[in-house]
Amino acid sequence: MGYVTYRVKAMNMKVKEIESGRSSRTFLWTFPRSITFESTSSYSIRFGDVDLKGHFVFDLSNTDEVHSSFIGFLLDMKRKIENQGGSFRLQLSTSLDYLFYQLNLQEHFILEAC
Image (tube, rainbow, N blue to C red; front, side, top):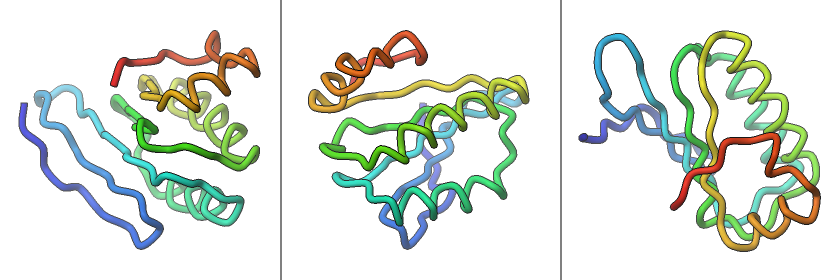
């Protein structure tokens, strides 16, 4: 399976469309090491323009710290994507995996191994 660069934004987040067939598209969103309140606001604006039909994987495997607003962003994106018939998965770093465990968030998301 090859990767095609879909778009790279100035907010230090990479987006790739993974070619997976004509009927479904998979998007890999790779996030930076640290996610602040300001960057979370930018992500929310950025996702306002995205067609949410398809499969979305948020790669947080290199992310060590997130602002609490980012947790709300993840929950909101999951709801919006699933309401449009898409699927939503997370790849977590060790530190975020522990944070999700502490906050009992693992039951709300489908987690993929990195």
